[in-house]
Picture: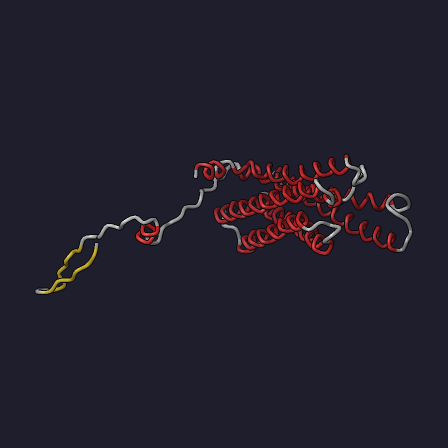
Length: 273
């Protein structure tokens, strides 16, 4: 309970910790893979840094943790915005946007977890599904949250930072998808490899992937100021039947005294207090 209360009063650290875990994992597995000669030094695809052990284990474990924490941050953001929108008497439309963003954000976080669990070479379809959820819905999430800020906060530094991040994320995603498709088509046609003719389009694809991933994950940093002025009360549990619990622990339940209440003249009713 003490730990939960401490976390609830320091929520502003969560938008820092979650990106550090996820992005730190990308960098760690990159360094390990390069040192062992598993990937090239210059911008490999992120997932290819987690194909071989020990990088694969580190990547899976830490990205799962980061994705779970990211989902928690998204939930706290939803609660905070729901309270703010209620206080300022926002329209039903924007309250709905906030609710939709919660679901979109959670599915995006789940996509990051899929990327961590389903390795890109052995389980490519599931890996690509997770990447699609993480990236496409990640872009949708940042724009949903940015729309709320632009509507009610106008041009504060938070709104500007969110708008900038959303634009960078969107541009990165467009470049990633277009360059990836071009690279795969030309590779299939036998026009070259990533080490010669197709080097330029390959690097465009990989660099834009790193850019998009970083911009999506770093977006939650803009929640720092809002989280610093709220706190989350830890949940409590209410026991429905005290006597059942006492019996489960082999503790004798004392008999409660009977009370005789008059119903009407000449008659009484017996009840247990």
